[in-house]
View 1 (cartoon, rainbow, N blue to C red):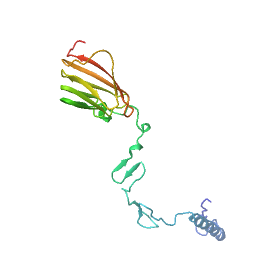
View 2: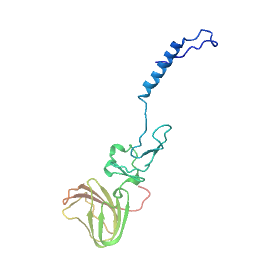
View 3: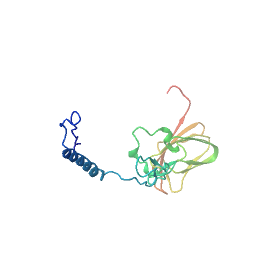
Length: 212
């Protein structure tokens, strides 16, 4: 209902305003409207978990009383939040946003193994390895994954052996290791089945040359 305004005339007692009965009928109608509408209004505010109020009625101030509440689910913690490892999926990563620094060591690191006769060729540790065979040398493979390629830059005029229990090593091409110079041995894991891995490798000698 729209507000009903009492006509009070132009001047006092000029007889142009609403009769008394009509005027108070408008008053009653206006009050009825107010009281009927007030039934649906909020009568008081009760604080819940993490929320506090300074009073239940009137001018109420609502405050977040637990700004560092503990979260559960994919994101846990309070002040410092932790995202569950399985909550970050490929779909949540924008295209072209995985940088070089975010890749595993197996795809980015150079590992200098030094000189010796027994070397651990841990495929999870690096993508490029350098070594010098100080005698007949054995390179023991570990942690390779299918499709991974590593480069072994090797020198030292001694016999070289690759080893890993149950694994098969296949040489590609006819070039043999030449310990009198520098060698680049490229190795790819073509099958990472546990206890029966397969590797293919090729050997190439190299020398410094700025005119390919």
